[in-house]
Length: 175
Length: 325
Image (cartoon, rainbow over all chains, first blue to last red; front, side, top):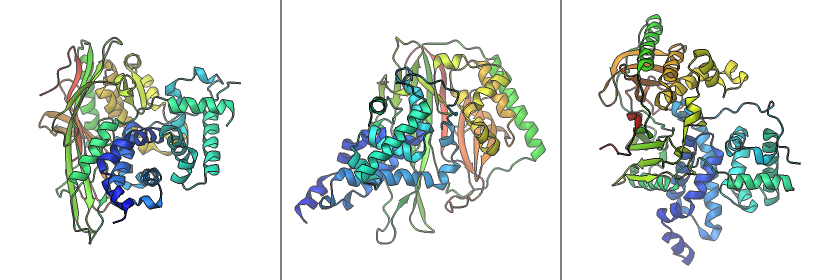
């Protein structure tokens, strides 16, 4: 067994959870449209990661890159599951955001956290995922790009587009 | 990124999110891998089909037990009885007298099922039960308390809610996290409450998803059944539920814990959601799922009795934080 492999072996599921669960939860909360969905996403993603922990090879890159690829793929998979469509529970708390065309333009400072969250949830899933990685999990643009298979520059542009859409939804006027 | 986008980015980074509790998620994950069935790894990779549920929502399940589903009633009979059952509950609810206390206490026992595919023909399951309690303080000067019993944990934990936790002061209603004051202002008029319940759905969604819309309204009526709203609001919610196309009566039934109640159900594909209400008080007793047929794409789901459930052990005002035994 190589030295790096030996080091990787020492990383236990408990370590992985301890070090990354908070960031995964914040990412999930920004991606999801309900608290229940956020919990599912966070839990499934971490479960997958700890189950694959013995496959992690440090010589192929840092743990964070490996982990966030799994988290993002898990979040994508979660949407495809048939049973999710069957579950009333998941639908109970999903937010359907109304069009904001009637909202008057106003200053960002006057927008409440609840309104901001509702606007985030009104974005498409890809935009929410990008914002969740960048501002929920607080990853840098290189890490965001690696998680969603984009270059750092492309990830930066994609995040900026998501922010721009969010501004439009909020009809922010903070000139 | 320009200045304006910078400011919005900063708001996003600092946004208090209704995030899952990291400690609880970690506990569930670690418990999940410990309880995972261990098949012959050379034959098949175990694929978890579902995630563990949570009190906020998200209980998902695959039904594996073989049994005969409940026999449905004749359609015309159903419509009439469903209406009657709920209207009776509504009348009882309306007549209930409520004395507000310091805390709105809810205790929910949750059973969730995790299913694992061992092979095309083999499955294994692991069930988890947990009981969560919450005491939401009515006054800003009081603290909200949680008692969480993660699956597999030796002891439950009673703790003060983090003020940043949205569950500390708010109640979910179709994703709208509402304060106690906002809930108290809900209208007691059928048409006004219906309008409020419909508000989250754009017109286009209402037109093109009538079945889903009914399910969502059913879900909101359930949420109102657990929330600290005026009895009259809960009564109106039941009236709205009674009018939903597709709702059917289960008549007088026992809930998952053996308590007497009246049931009303609504189907969603292969699943039927069954809500059991205490006819004497209008309180929700439990909500559970029954698979009524094999669903396309989910061959492991076979018709059978309930399995994942949320049983309401307590729901009402109290003056003290005293966990259930």
